[in-house]
Length: 144
Image (cartoon, rainbow, N blue to C red):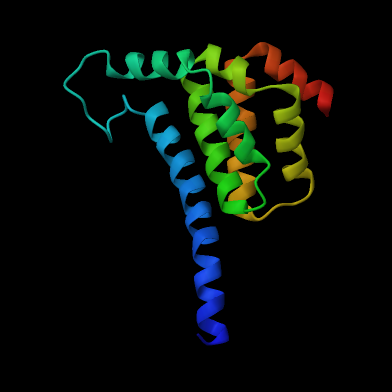
C-alpha cells in the first residue's frame, strides 16, 4: 500500500463521522419543519405531533447542542439552523435549547467574525431564541 492510499483509508472513517453529524443535524432541522409546505402530509396535526415528539425526547437537545462545539464549521452551522427551527416552533424547545451557555457560544461566533454562512446561522438562532422566549431575549441583552 502506498502512502496516499494509506492516508485515504485512514481518513475515510473520519469523513464518514463528519458527514453523519451533518446528516443528524439536517434530519433534526427537517423534523422541526415537518409541517411546512415543502414537506406535505395528509395528517392535519403532523407538525404538532412532530414537535411534541421532539419536546418529549430526552436527548435531542443535548445531541444538537453538542454539535455547536464541533470543530467543523459546517456541523456548527447545521446545528444552529436545526436549533433555530426548533426554537421557532416551540417555546418548550426554545427554553431547552436557549441556555446561557448556548447563547454565549453562539454570540462568540458572531463576535469572532465567523464565515458568512456560519454568521447567518448564528444570527438566525439568536433571532429565533429572542423572538420566541422573553427570557432568552433578556439573557441575550445581559450577555451583550
